[in-house]
Amino acid sequence: INPFNVLDESFVLKSETFYDLTGISILVEPICLVLVLLFIYTTSLNDKLLQLSGKLRFKITQFILYTFMIGMILHVARLPFSFLNNLRWRDIPPGEVPFGTWFVNYLGDVFSTWGLAAFVLGFLYVCMHYFKKRWWLAGWFISIPIIYLLFGNSSLPGVSGLEKLEQPETVTAIEAFIEKEELTLEGVYLFEASEWTETLDLSVHVAGGEVQVVVWDTTLAALTNEELVYIVANELYALENGPSAMQIVILIALSYVAFFVTSRVIQRIVPEEQYGQFHSVPVSWAALLLAMFIVMPVMNNFDRDEQLHVDRLALEAVNQPEVAVEALKKMALHQPVQLNESLLFDLFGTSRVSLIERLENINEK
Image (cartoon, rainbow, N blue to C red; front, side):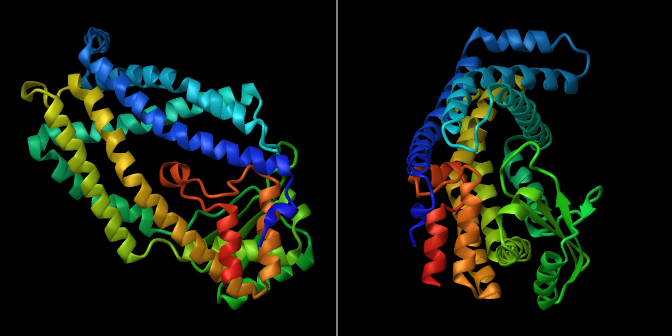
């Protein structure tokens, strides 16, 4: 199956260029961030940040301010990568991102990334305080139920505030598929997205055996009823066929590796008298980046295998390969999408499967 007969050649070329360049930047960016963190730790800059945060009364507020200042320095270092990424996306319509929109998204990323980092680092330092050099083992044990809650629960919350779709033929087609799966369709809802985007999307929410389907009006205008049913099947099976027990076990093992690597890096660089103190936060942050860099390829590979499996299940449900192919190609036409495999990007940058792989997977089936 060759999708290029329906895709503009410049779109294909720019998409390939984007992912090749992004794959390289994915390697360069964390190296730069680790170097920045080590620079902070080994220079007087760290002492100045500690002095500023030390003016606050409580330890927790000192820690929040200290990690926030480090986070701001890291995001300044990330700014060139983010801006170049934005320029490349602007060459791939309809994924054009105006500078103002990119900057707002960038600020949102600044605070969300800092918040996550502060939470994780705070968790590590609580473990260090109570469990000393065995903190990583205690942290790993505590992470086990968190991993299960995050990856073992496949349901999504329901929707509210949307109008039900008033197209009987479309609703009937979706309802027939849902009933075949021995579930109950609570409703098909319409999300008015065309006012601000051309992107196609659709989501499925399951709770208590009842299914809610939210269709973007852009998707409704672009896809036939049969193609909509295929995408619904894909989304539903993605929820129902979440990580297997073996995959969750492997994720727990990867968490062990991440904690172990983080602890060894900290112990090798940080003097014993600074262990578990705020002064060593930059090293802990760098160690976390290194640990995630090690486990990310395995996690991404799991997700891609799962997506290909879900594609096959959805194809079996509709039993119309041409419908599945057209649905995937139409979705690709209306949003920036990875067309071809890119080794570095696949390993470290995304858990999504390229369009070519997905179409070949359907063709093989």
